[in-house]
Image 1 (cartoon, rainbow, N blue to C red):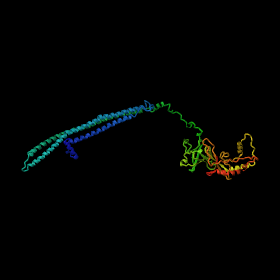
Image 2: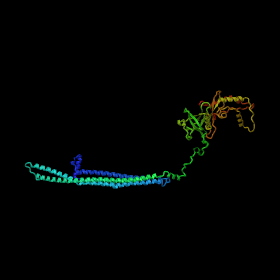
Image 3: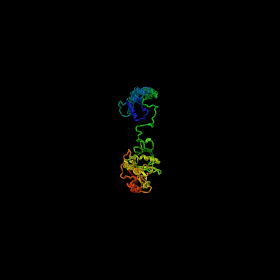
Image 4: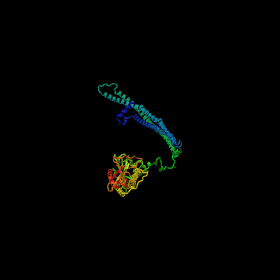
Length: 560
């Protein structure tokens, strides 16, 4: 760096508010073109960013174009020509063209425009160097001349002052004449160098003005070239994108489907094909007896844990289950709310017709297999009794009869007072009557005679609605008192193929059969038991009382 340049920079650092007289033309012009060099550097960085952006855009377009793979897999779905597959082929190829347009634009900008900016920047550096080599050096010489002249003028003043001193010898070089001649020479040289510097500065300023215009012209030419390239690239890409749009707009909306339907006509369903009737659907064993309910209808259920009745739809199945559903909708038949396995339960007696609600109960055993019941909810391990109620007595009787053959055992109600009255009446009306002689043919057997004797016995009636109560093995006969009482007789359920016969409980008592009318060998008169049926009943009373238990205020007599 030149001397004047260093001094100028030093002054600039010490005082940024220096007066214009302290600045040199070369300094401020050099500083201006240093700023121009920074401007061109920024322009170069901007264009280099454009190059990088366009290059990466081209790579991105190439990458996304490679995502399209034709023919589509599986390969037998679309038309080879005139369909979506051909359109995607065009999309991939034209996307390649767009990628190439971006890549070529990046290369052109880098090779032509960016290099032009770099050259312009180098020219600015050269101009700054010329200023430093010419005008700046002359400025440094002027500065040096001024220093020498100032020193000589000071020496001249000292020489003149020393002459007036008395008895003072002056050296030759300090003679004011000689010193003044040196000052004249230095001042002339200073003025000469200042003139040279001034002429150089004027030429430098004129050249800098022209050079700055050249810089601006170069930037304009660079940007014009960039805009032309950008416009050409954009126009080319727009044409490619329009051709892609034209390709997709030209597709027939139904051609692909018509071709597909023609190829797969043996598999696709014809639009005119008749629909299948849901009501006519069949499957193997759909009508098997075990799949059809024995009885179904609405009932209300209550347990000892719930005081209110809840109405639901119930189904009795041949498998021995009583299922509960929220409604009669067949779509929920596979998911019952509650299920009770009847072969492990005891069926309670029916309520009397015309007297109160139509109810019956089912007592659940320890292994009844119920689902979603209170046992599962509350963890109850003891036996559970369920109470059921229907709207009519007939519906209740239908459910009771449906459950009867499926339950482990069932209970029947009898009127003990009516049975007692019927027994007494039979004894009174049969007093003194001589039975007709029995046949002694060879075909008679003891069992036949027993059946004849049984058929001559007048059995007491059951409790009205209890089918077969007169001949039921568990029928209790007459009661032990004269009051109007009813007894509940437990009768074994008829064997069926769903459950085995239950074992007798330790408290089960086998009831005696009703007294039969017998003959004495000699007189043909009825035996004492036949003559005095009431006495016979009284003799059986203790036995019947021992087998009687209470449940919900009713009397039960268990049988086998």
